[in-house]
Image 1 (cartoon, one colour):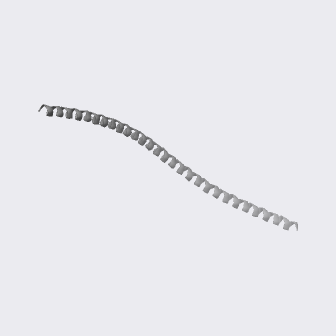
Image 2: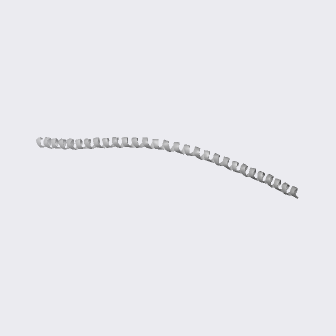
Image 3: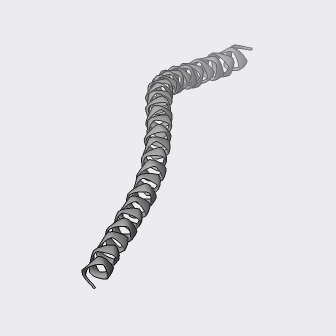
Length: 105
């Protein structure tokens, strides 16, 4: 009778150890899969951060270029306004001289 109890306990111990090993193996597999997934996400994050940094750099360059273009446009508009004013004064002067010339003739 006690041999049967000991045998049952030994079988339970063996079964428990096998079950515990199975659970541990399963957990290790899941942990490994999780670790690989984390490495993949970290790699993706690094690529995206590098892409964001490059885009921010290009945005900064584009902003500087836009500001330079707007400054040049403003200067050209000022030059054009000055030339139009000069043309208006010159036209008025020529018209007065033409009128005076016509009156002399």
